[in-house]
Image 1 (cartoon, rainbow, N blue to C red):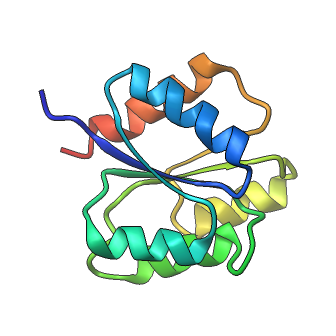
Image 2 (cartoon, rainbow, N blue to C red):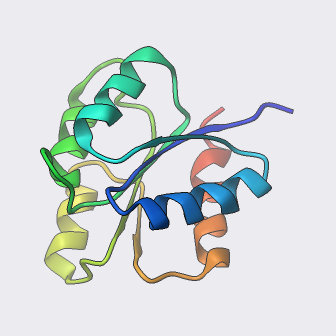
Length: 125
């Protein structure tokens, strides 16, 4: 079984830990970063299969990170799922315009998270 590596980028440590625990229990390999700088470091040191990304973070917004990540030839094909409390249509539209594969609004149900992660990683082989 090919274990998918998921990078969770969220400055809310409790939220990141909860997501990480759920995904670990479903056989995903978890990496975490609590800001954009750490996220860039983690991405440059190892290949990830999926990024779960908050929008409001220190240093770089999730929008900035998604845009930069999608413009990099080495990482442009890695799916990015935005997980944010921002729920207005403009933010959601912007996320998709910048290359997000999916958008989950906080708070979300665990089953919603699993459905989106499984759908997005299914095509990432």
